[in-house]
Length: 86
Image 1 (cartoon, rainbow, N blue to C red):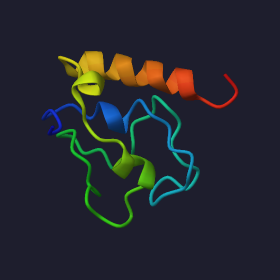
Image 2: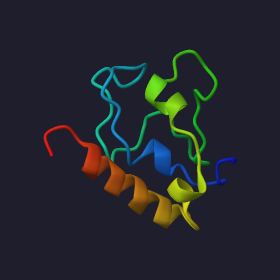
Image 3: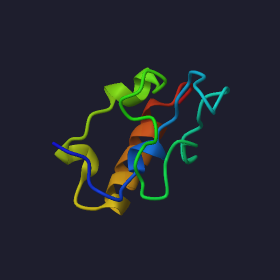
Image 4: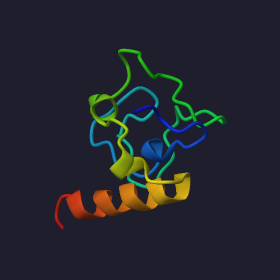
């Protein structure tokens, strides 16, 4: 499955708990990644600097749902369910 053009939900909803270029403290869930461009594509997609967490997140019908809004809701819920300490 390919990413939905203009979505970027996976670059906003999930947290990234490791430092990476441009975000030395990682990225909290719900915060837009600094590498998410205005067209909602990742500026470091396919580059070695891309966090492993991003490379491991693959689009699926379940995750991407029917719209960007639904994908944001689904990913936000997964973030809440898997956040350490919950």
